[in-house]
Amino acid sequence: MTFFVRTAGTADLEAVSVLLGETWHATYDHIYGPERVSEITRSWHSVEALRPRINRLNSEFLIADDGTRIGGMAYAAATAGDGKMVVLHQLYVRPGCQRQGIGRDLLAEISDCFPTARTLRLEVEEANTPAIDFYRAHGFTQTGSTANCGCADSGIPAVVYEKKLAAG
Image 1 (cartoon, rainbow, N blue to C red):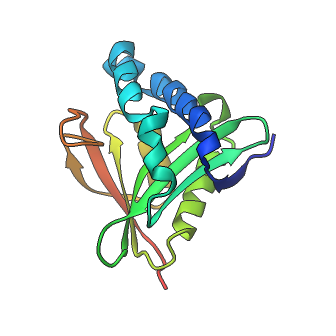
Image 2: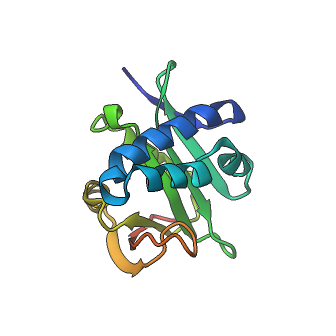
Image 3: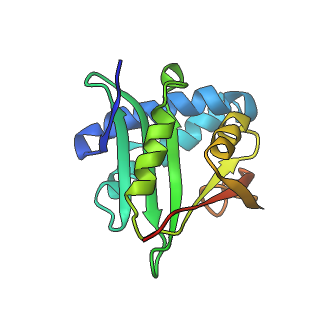
């Protein structure tokens, strides 16, 4: 099946929420346990939590869609100020759709959505080695670390990666 990357809309939020729950359980249950992962997905990935991202200024919310299902999603936003830094907050591919180029296509489109940006930054859970390998393979280098990925008190350790972009 061929997936096409497009901007997400309000009608996509329920499917994105389900995708995030499925992806998080597949990725993090063995690290944090299913109960903690369910707690996080209810808080971070509910339709209500995702809704403000749809119309946020200086951001892009993308999905990879094959016409019957969503295979992946990405969300990024420019930081305040001059917009030269963009933070990739989420890039997830449904477990059954991985290794088909969806993550690569979402990452490329996110980069293209911010033509004046010079740097793309992200945080990735330090135990998520498949994601770290993916980002390294796409030109990201580690620039730091944090004890609280995603929010100030998450308790999720993460490494910070950055990639220089060809800005205009």
